[in-house]
Image (tube, rainbow over all chains, first blue to last red; front, side):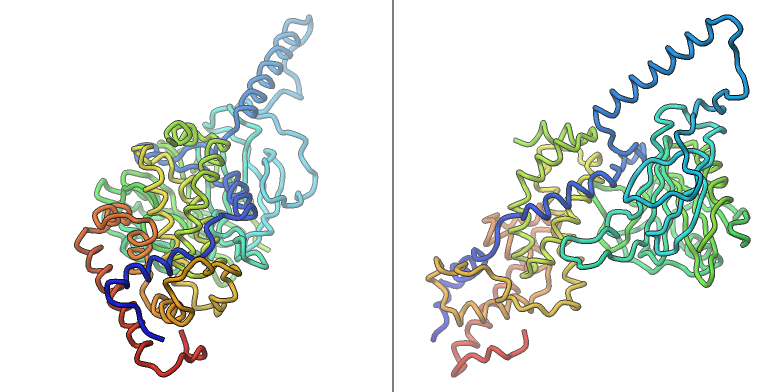
Length: 304
Length: 184
């Protein structure tokens, strides 16, 4: 046996690389399509959050539903003796759909009924929460389309996994943005420079504050306190300077989330038994209504 | 070719993105496998890359560069999978389809074995350069552009990777026989 002559090395490498599979299996193809449905598209840097993809048929259906509802209201209002009564819709135009009276079984993805209680059992730190009424600033559009996903992208079982991977990210999508819950996630070591390295999720509220304070190019507000499940949680509003990461695609690293230059977020550190769940808000500024909604949601959270 | 589909997908059209996945998935799988040398890891990397592409698609400024941009996401996903591959001990040869090498008459089985072992010793960054240059047939400036690295870096990585593979083959020539039990 002899090695190829030097001039044949390139041919040898090419022949070596030529061998091997060159087709994507149907199983992986369909797994990708399944992932799309629970993965919202991020917006451009100037608009850091976009609504999750909504199919054309959904939009048409929602438009028809609104039209029918408005027509019904108009007919009702024109009848003699009619008027607002005890069954009037709640403020903000949001009408609860058929709400389950007990915590709903957790499907992989679905819509949230305002006022209903859900159990996020697939999250690594399971918790129960009640969906707040959107009164306080949300637009009424898509009010029946509050979505949630039990796992975010990388937490979903991979095509080769025999069992689901740890579900360290839980996302609730609402009309003006989203809130993500993180437990034992990998995060950027420096929020401003996610391309420079990762770190494990801080495990105390103070450590979360120290992580934020140590991030360069990030303006961090003084923490505010709120009660979550009988414990004191902290929240900071952060703004990323123009010098922070902004580029096509994902910055290198294993972190599941990162922020872009110019974005505003609220970061919550929610203590649980021996650990901290980090909650992030994502939305187009101003974030007041979204942050208020998340505050009210967190007030209903109970960890199991 | 994909411009219209990319434009539609950027507006959230899942069907358009599915068509893009169908059109580009095979090439991505081929690239990922050749970098990672493991079908399971390659499939994970491809899935990660496509989901990242969907999530970040609105940040893609030039739809004409979709595939190049996707390949960069794919390579980053391969790097991440390579870092996690320590937990896997799967044999390459058990994963290679039967007859995959039948048409390859340049390499003997033992040469291929040595190349495989040499290749698996390379850092994933050097493997990527080899794959883009020798498998995809890209020039070094094109490789650099596709991987988002300077041309000099691409050239250096190719040099070191080629030298390592050449050394693997030459070492094989000096050996009286091949020990398949040698650790990769």
